[in-house]
Each structure stands twice: as C-alpha cells, then as structure tokens.
Amino acid sequence: MNTLSGKHLLLGVTGGIAAYKSAELIRQLRAQGALVRVVMTSGAQQFITPLTLQALSGNPVHTGLLDEGAEAAMGHIELARWADALLIAPATADFIARLTQGRADDLLSAVALACEAPVAIAPAMNHAMWENAATRANIAALRTRGIPVFGPALGEQACGETGPGRLLEPGELVSAVASLFETGALAGTRVLVTAGPTREAIDPVRYISNHSSGRMGFAVAQAAVEAGAEVILVCGPVSLATPPRVQRIDVVSATDMQRAVSEKVVNCDIFIAVTAVADYRPERPAGHKLKKMAGHLALTLVRNPDILAEVAALPQPPFTVGFAAETEAMVEHARAKRLAKGVDMIAANRVGAGRGFDAGDNALHVIWAGGERELPLTGKARLARQLLALIAERFHDRGTKVIPFNAKDSA
Image 1 (cartoon, rainbow, N blue to C red):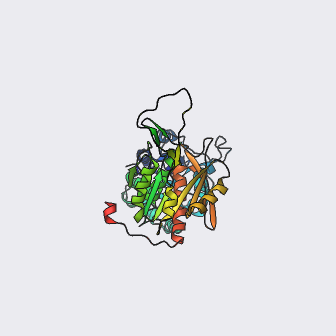
Image 2 (cartoon, rainbow, N blue to C red):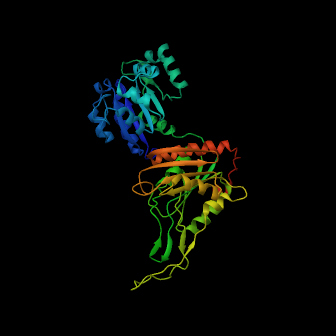
Image 3 (cartoon, rainbow, N blue to C red):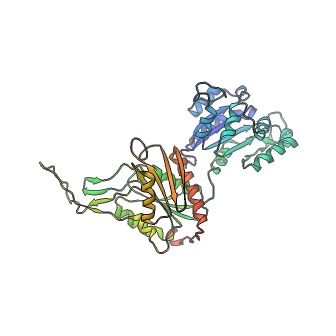
C-alpha cells in the first residue's frame, strides 16, 4: 500500500551523525509513493554528500539560501510552496534552537519559516543534550506551536553512551510522516464520491463522453479517507488505481451511476459529485455497429438524470457538494448552479487550454450560502485536501447529525 502516493515531501537534513540514515529514509519514502526533495545544511554535508541524496531522491539537492539559479534567488519560497509536508530528520539541538527562535539565516531555517504545510522534526543528539533544560524548553515551545516531534528513540549512541537521543529508524519515520495527513476532521462520517466521465452508447463500439480523467475525484476520495471518513467511490471508466481504504464501484453510463448513487447515498453524511456526467445520451442506441453513410448521421439525444439535484432533493439529504466545470463566467455560472440544484456547496473550476480535465494541477472557487473561498492553482492531491478541510468545516458548522453506518451496507 503506497500510503504517501503523490505527496510532496521536503526532507531537511541537519549536521549530525544520524544524517547517514537520511539515505534509507528517502528510499523508503519514495517506495511509499512520495515525491521527495532534500534541503541540506552545511553541517549535514560533512556527514553525507548531496550527490548521494540527489541520486536517491531523483531531484537536485538544495543547499544554499542565495542560489541565483533558484527562481530569482527565492528558492526557499518555491520549496515551501511545493511541500505538502516538511520533515527535518535528523534535527540537531542547534537547529531545534534556531527553529524555536524563528531564525532564517540558512536555506533550511528559511524554508521552515515560510512553510505553510505541516512541519515536523525528528531529533537526534547526545542524551545529555536532549535532556538539557534548554533543549527541553525548545521542544515544549515547538509542540505548543503545533510542530510534531517524532522521537527520539532510546538506545546506544555514536559516542558510545546509552540514552534517549537516537534518531527513529526510517520505517518509523515513514509511518510518522504518513500520520501528518490523517487529520481526523471527518472521523465517524461516511462520504460518497463520484468521479470520472460517463459513456453513453451510440452503438456497441461508439459512445458519447468527455475529457474527464477522474484524477480530481480520486484525489478527493483519498483526502476524505485521510480526514477519517469511510469512503465509497463511484467512478466511470478511468485508468486509475483505487486509493487505499476506499470502496470502489465501477459504472459506465449516467443511468448506471444514478443507480449506484441511489443505493449508496442513503446512509451517507456527505455526497461529493466530482464526476463529469454526460448531460445527454442517445435515445435509442443501435444494437449493431452503425455503418458509414454518404450523408449525415442524425442522433436524437435525451437528457440524462441529474444525479446531483436528485440527491440534494432527498427528504433527508446529505451535505451535498457539486462541481462546476466552466469555460466562461465561471463564478456567475457556479452561483446559479448551486441555487438551481439546491446543493450546500459548489466547487467551480475553469476548463480548457490545459486546465481542469486531465491536467496535474487545478484551482477551485468554492461557493456556499453566505460565503466563498478561492483555492489557488496547485496539484490536485493538495487541492483535494484543502477542499476536504473546507467541506469538513462547513459540514460541522451546519450541525449535521452523523448518520450511524448501516452494518449490512458496510459489509
């Protein structure tokens, strides 16, 4: 199971003997699907070379604060924005002190100060340094600021002494990093997500569809799992691996999706319709392959069911979130769609010219009754986590009572 699939992990390596473990840590992070970049202090480079960590991470290692080749010498901002999480491992007593003070006099400390993603440290030092009152006060201050502290472990140290101060083993650190994404914001809830396109048959070999890849919907499903929800994903035809801990139901047409959603939505607390459902389908699909003709071929199309509106109109609807893919007047059309369909929230995105469908990045303008928020262009995995945090906030503000899971339906 790739628990960190698609996550952008920035690893800070400081100057202690435990820096040698960073090589294996990078290898294990990548094995779990993470994209890894490395920042090294000058002290760290005395223990392990940047070339080693570059080879293992597959990315250039960053070492200098004033690197003219790094986005007009603003590389620390670029790195901070890229990261989904920053792990400093090993974190020496000196770096912990500087982090506590809010220093920004080298690249790693500047990145840590600019980083809005979760920042965690894994201390490694002599046991006497770890137990010193100054270090204990620094650790307490960082914990107060919400910075997780992973370790240290108890055991034999490089100096030959024994005590607390050993860096956690790479496997333990990988698990600890994965826990950073487990927010618990939707713990105890059940979320139904739809994703991908639908296909509406013209004949046995042709169909009407759209350019949706399903990537955003799958990212939303994964983010919902990380938020602690039990997640069901109903998806049209896509070539994507099922996110861990997600129950997947594959469908083809809009009517297939309608049936699956109708069956599963009954016990759900939140419904997120990311799928790009075809608005129309051929009225009478041919039972055989249609042959090429000299003239025009006319197809009579009929409206497909409006799954989102149907869910919103249920007597006891879940918290309902729709998506609006627009090429023009995005915000105005999304506001109108939210009101017309009666949904709690609409996430609007602009499509076309390399944006939206089948692109790695996306941006959303999220609208609800009495408010709206812009989620800027970023990777779909990170965008999905931002959206789920907002959904969780609005869901709890609405005072929705969590519906107990149906044991038979959960089986």
